[in-house]
Amino acid sequence: MNENDKPDSAACSAHHMAIRDTMDILAGKWKIPIIGTLSFGKKRFMVLIASIKGIAAKMLSKELQELELNGLVRRTVLDTKPVTVEYELTEYGHSLRPIINEMASWGKQHRERIMK
Amino acid sequence: MNENDKPDSAACSAHHMAIRDTMDILAGKWKIPIIGTLSFGKKRFMVLIASIKGIAAKMLSKELQELELNGLVRRTVLDTKPVTVEYELTEYGHSLRPIINEMASWGKQHRERIMK
DNA sequence: TTTGATAGTTTCTTAAAGGAAACCGGTTTC
DNA sequence: GAAACCGGTTTCCTTTAAGAAACTATCAAA
Image 1 (cartoon, helix red, strand yellow):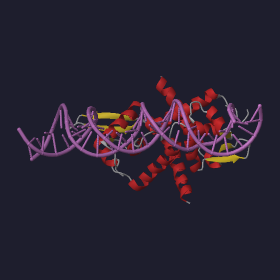
Image 2: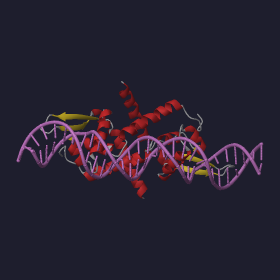
Image 3: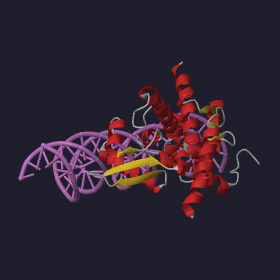
Image 4: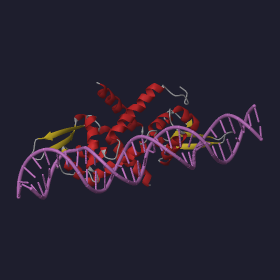
């Protein structure tokens, strides 16, 4: 294979597509904070609002919907006096751990590298 | 530690920041295709334009500048008849491999999961 | 019956990302 | 001298992401 050839562009673009899928799922300002917060256990809507500094209700609800759609988060309505809603990471949601950890450690050493 | 507490919010937000740094570096529609294409070897500007389907000169040049700024890509001007410019991944650029591979494999199985 | 809590939605506005097309400066071949 | 090649930049426009603030529906306690 010559360096300047496109090597198997079909497999290659499937590769890029898979990466983009993953990026899209984690995209936006709030997905990581939300997943990070939920990784410590289930939380109600208002608790999330309070835990994630700066997030607005609109954003939280929108991002949670996307995460739920992708099967990463489970939403449970509880039959309490004022209705409460609990959000938690699914098993599948937890499967993002390795990726997130890799990104965190790369990001950390990158910051150090940039500083000096 | 109670499940509903914020556990060490300082370390936690440093963690999120590191993840965001990594995401930002890979963000945008073209970073992954560019890195992917360069991972097979150095390429000239026009070759990149031709290899990366759909990219416009403006975007390519902008994204390459960012990648260079972050030390992931090296730009070399060659003293040829019409000046040509070669772009290549640095060692540092190659250090993204593990992350990119993890994202690719997670993305692949996610796509399969969504299909069924 | 008014107030407060919960879990959102709606509306309006601004900021950032991205694309299409034209342009530019240097060089070289016809 | 005209046209072409290379590596961009500029301008203009559209789309998308995000934030702030107000609003809604349901229930329960005071």
